[in-house]
Length: 387
Image 1 (cartoon, rainbow, N blue to C red):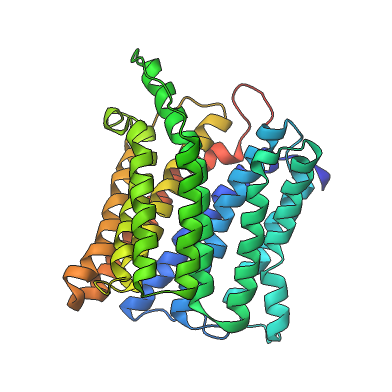
Image 2: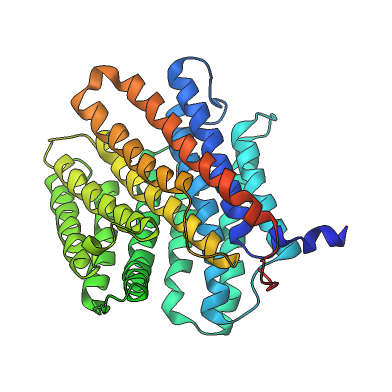
């Protein structure tokens, strides 16, 4: 039995959580598209269908990927042993139990469902906190704070079914994207350009990086306390401007021949676009529901698809080279976001078709990831190293 836990699949956090997150996103979007097509009824016993979709894309799909990334990254940041084997399997089980109780009615009281569903984030935070505190890696304590807020928002939502809680949770995921993106996008881009013989340099933007994070916190507060007001419009507009200016040193225009690079820039661009559209909602030009997918399908979907491909290749000892199917999925996820955001805005009479089409395309993008990368996730590194 113990041999089972020694399988390469449980060697690093990215392996099971990237697999589970991608698989769950395919299943969830097939269910969602089927619901709009009139063939499937999502779980209705705990929350309504729209709330279920919003909650599970944050706390099911996104949190699985966040867990896989952070569990892998913290080991690198601290030099400590990563969560693996039985420890990692236990975390996966908690995540899975959360998805089970949100999908199937076992007749449990509401408090039991909430207790089971919300148990994963504290367990993940504790798994990350121990190595971070032991090494006193203060720079990354912020992730413990973000996870704490995500946990609080989860409880808030499940107890009240208030969408403001999910909007705040979404902003915590976007803060992670802004924070991690600000570190890795310029670093990866410069490294890739130098490998091609193009001499470029990273430009430190510490003040701009801090301003970007503070601006997103302000937007989160406005979504909770000032949604649909000019205050939100100003906060989101300022954040959009800061993130756009921050990008001017990322060498974006030099990345178009390298999909592994431009996909990250595209995800960051969607963050800028989403914040700009969100600013319009503060002045009554659009509704929040109409633009939220620029931040979810656009920023989160694009950034996650790009990162899980890069991390899987790098941490399983493969060359950072993409096949045609993965490259095609990078383009397809852009079409998915464009269709989901702008289709209903300009052709609202065809809302069902836009949702069904974008859900199907999203599912195909992450199914492509599973098709190409699952063998890498389940097998040992070809160079014999442990991961």
